[in-house]
Image 1: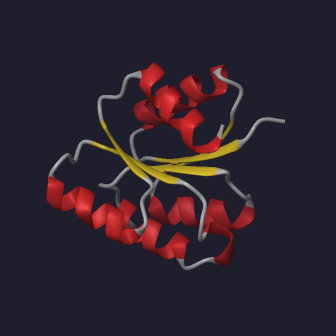
Image 2: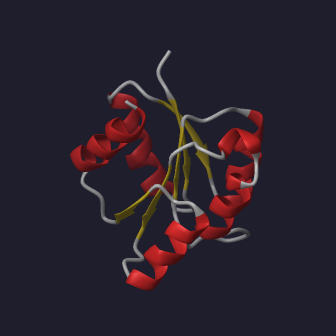
Length: 121
């Protein structure tokens, strides 16, 4: 069984592309449609990595990261942000919240896999 990656993005097409990319490399993928859905799914199925968008309805990525970091099972789980946001201020906010890394959309599938392999193997 491959490692579990929870992908959180309100864009169905991005979720589909990320899921396809990760599944092709042997990862199990759990998809969530926004931060609130991501939090609920993270609580019911342990993820080895969380890959989240920043701008989403109900709960944004930074809030999701802060909330996950407050849960014992996600204190040290890698969390990557995959977003269109590329400002230094937003990246600093992500790091402060506990993000492990920051990727900017559109993403290169091979680069995404390289980063995922680097953080969870």
